[in-house]
Length: 176
Image 1 (tube, rainbow, N blue to C red):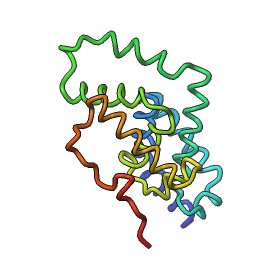
Image 2: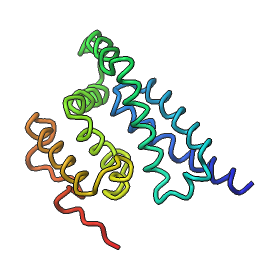
Image 3: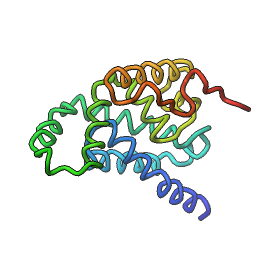
């Protein structure tokens, strides 16, 4: 009974983070919700193993990104989304929506590993350690992907040169 409650609580807490992370990765909230639902179904199936993981959230995000990658191979990830975005007249889009689209478009230009590192670090708010676990790579690789992604976004004009994000890779040392 307690295990069922822990699973339900994990799913409730993780759902918005998964949907948000996947939305940024795949560019579609509807697809993100489908992928997040599949991810949580797999969490439920493997809960006894997942709950014992160092970071169940990192495990779920790794599964989510793998599902997105598989979907992208089958469907052509951006081929479906870009015509929908281009069809909307700019004047009809409010500023917040325009900002969201600008962020998605900028993220879409980044290589997959850089995009996922930024999403996990700054949107999903995972530590470098948990991001490395989710991406199945060393922590220094996460820091390198994050640094390169931020540099690319600065060059594209999305980030001002004067803006410093908290916990940028060169300053992000895990304590403990």
